[in-house]
Image (cartoon, rainbow over all chains, first blue to last red; front, top):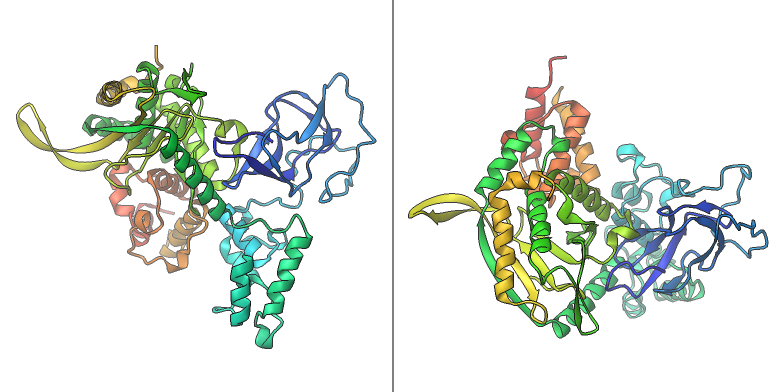
Length: 431
Length: 83
């Protein structure tokens, strides 16, 4: 079980994408892991042949637990005596088919967004049995609701409601056996014993456990890290004009958003100014060689994910835009790969144009800094003795006082400011 | 392009960007970004999706004209290439 984030101590195998005997190559997706935050596509780090799957679908195991054995490709015995494949495995009707099954998503062929999947689980609806009416036959929330409409106010007896609250059972999702289909106490009790009997019972709503994880990580951050904050208002007019000119000649799919400039500027500044890019581990700061830039992404159903841009200081703004777009979209649709949620060396929280004016954030341990940006807004701006109105963004830096101080932090924000005053420099590869 | 076709195109793209949103409850004059909690990248995806489906490229300077569902529909109808 890989560690897919500093706050993860266990994960659940949702789905195996390989079977014993399948050949795998470094980077192949072998399993889907539920981290409580999202479903992550777990990649394999070596070439070989899958020997045995050690953890079944639905099983939750601590980080570090072996999930499967891999036999070196050359030594590959067919491992025919491997014990029972996971119970959910579909009988293989095409034995001569190529061993790679990573694209065959079993019965879950159609994409179902995490929100819809959760709703379906709560209502006891099997999305694979539904005809999706969304774009590309995607199963939508509406499809699930039609399949199992919730009575507007489900009839639930007071005793059932009390029991449900105590036993953490969603009474509204139960099949009621009382008068007019009302859910009664016995229904809740039998639902609970069903849950106890089947270890692979429906997962609890993720939002709650995700919130708990964020809470415990932030508690740890506040307990361990002596934070300090500095802020700087940055004139965004040059960056803004550059963006307009850049986007004017490009179709929508190739355009940039302001965030791409902010991230590129931040990555380069973090590489240039010491003390912010790395981890604090075992009482010592360990600077990192490359900038692995974490992007704090709000997931639509609630909670935060932090996908990573690799070696972000070497990217041009167009490359940053493309990679950011890709990981952010996949963070929201639940298809990040394990390498994309590896530990960032510094993170950025960008509130975006619907956000507040500035953010004073909390660092994700073991990182030692977090750069925040509020929304770009028009502000009175004095320069050279003249007052004008300009687009302005307030940058903030949360620093770890064991590693850096306000003087260094000011230099980091100044470096970001400087880069944003020369946006054309962000189009070029760093020397 | 008639208004029904334009509305269908915009709704289809919105449904892919905000699959959990109740688009039937979206008023014609509601601000899309605010109402559906779209960030600038979601909005760019909306423009890219509209471009892909209808061939109409909304330049950035026209973004204020397509901030609402009604705005999108009238923009698409008036900018559609003559059939």
